[in-house]
Amino acid sequence: MGLPHYDLHCHSTASDGALSPIELLELAKNNNIEVLALTDHDTVAGVKVLQAENPAEIKIITGAELTCLWNGRVIHIVGLGVNLESDDLKSYLANLSDLRIERSKKIAQQLISMGLPDVFEQAKQFAGQGSIGRPHFARALREQGAVANEQQAFKKYLGIGKKGDVKMAWPELSETVGVIKAAGGIAVLAHPTKYKMTFTKLRLVIADFVGCGGEAIEVSYPGVTPDHHYHLLRIAKENNLLLSAGSDFHAPSQGWTDLGKYPPIKFEGQHVLERLLN
Ligand code: AMP
Ligand code: MN
Ligand code: MN
Ligand code: MN
Image: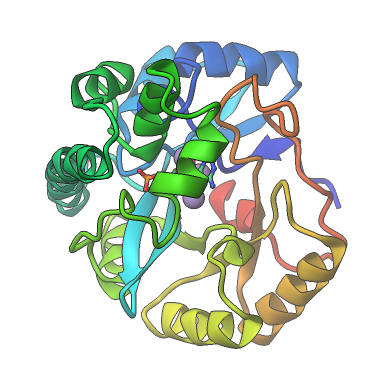
């Protein structure tokens, strides 16, 4: 099937990625990527930079990876092809930005309550103008010698269910899918096997996702096993979902992944690019 070389999920310094949007674009060129969606957490600031750059070699698809709640659990929905001028999207993202700042203060307090150093200022500095998140705290904890590496910071303090994984009133799944659709985009369920849910539970998420207008699902990303991949393809088919894939690239130092790299899709279902490129 003649799809271009694409990556529909990656991050820049506009959220928790290591490369600026322009550096990411250079890497995309080096990796022969033809279609790129920059999907930073809860912001489109980096996408605007890429749009202004308007590279001749690479088709830029607008995007964001939106944090939301399903039954009290955090899940990620990628919005692709959204109109950046949508007022609904703008006010939605402004609220998310406030929530992230509020959360960052709470995370810092939680870490202090566990006897760790106060890393608030440093985490804020690492986030810069970008969307502040747990990875900035993980890095600050490492820099201060409180943990050996970021992975350990998540394992002990910041990962799912840990004290630094501060609960917030993120928007509900239906609201998130709604705002993506209101902005003319396609809602994609991100990395479905990364939520520590059983497939039984995941099917409930997907039923609700489809029920509120979700249209696509990531079936390939680093870490997806062949077994998961086939499972996801079956679920996509049963629910008439378009297929998507991406590297979830954050940094060149993550040796196990690279921009544009993810297992090939083993099935010719309808691909989300067929909609996005038309
Ligand atoms: P946040 O958006 O602040 O909730 O942070 C979520 C981000 O943290 C994810 O997008 C990953 O980049 C990173 N992350 C989540 N879990 C881990 C983990 N166990 N190890 C390393 N990074 C993680
Ligand atoms: Mn991330
Ligand atoms: Mn994610
Ligand atoms: Mn991501």
